Amino acid sequence: MTWGDREPVFVQRGRWVYNTRSPVARVLMFASVVGLVGFYLYVSDTGQWSESELRDAVYEAARGLETQPQEVSFGYESVVRDAIQATDQGPGSDLVIESTGDDTGSGAENSAAQDSFEIGAAYLSDTFCMRLSPPEPPRTWDQRSTVHLTVQVSRGDC
Image 1 (cartoon, helix red, strand yellow):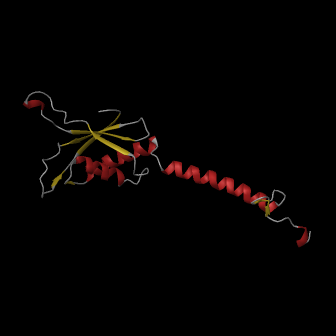
Image 2 (cartoon, helix red, strand yellow; image 1 turned 60 degrees about the vertical axis):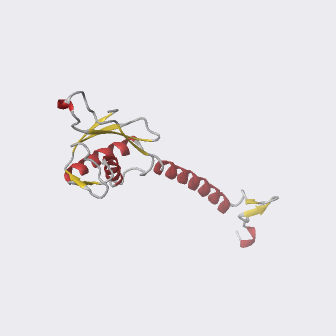
Image 3 (cartoon, helix red, strand yellow; image 1 turned 90 degrees about the vertical axis):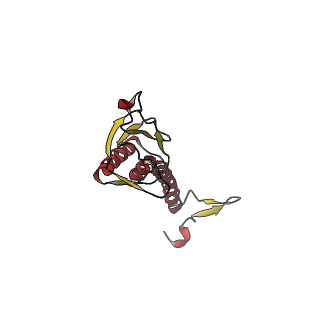
């Protein structure tokens, strides 16, 4: 086969297209399809939480919250969000953290002993309940509180 016998990679048929008779063009077509499928799978995987990523992140964040005293300035919700994002699990976005109330009962002996948060992701039905004690200290404009937290995590709603 001489240089003159080789098929061109592109031919003009109204517009420039791959020449299906060229072996180089066939390899390029196959590589383009594989590359696009791979890119789609990468983007779809990194854009949403999986159930295992969320579970691992919540339990790892709970361990992290208990090991060190936590400085609270904007409330427990921001502390929980920061702890989950510090685990480097999942995409970091689409995280849903909702306070479920203060668990107060009737009477002084049933006062709030913990704060509860439901943690989930925008496209997952799986949720986790994270209970933090002691309850969140009162917020003050210019002061930060440091607390030693005890954290309990359970699967499902609070």
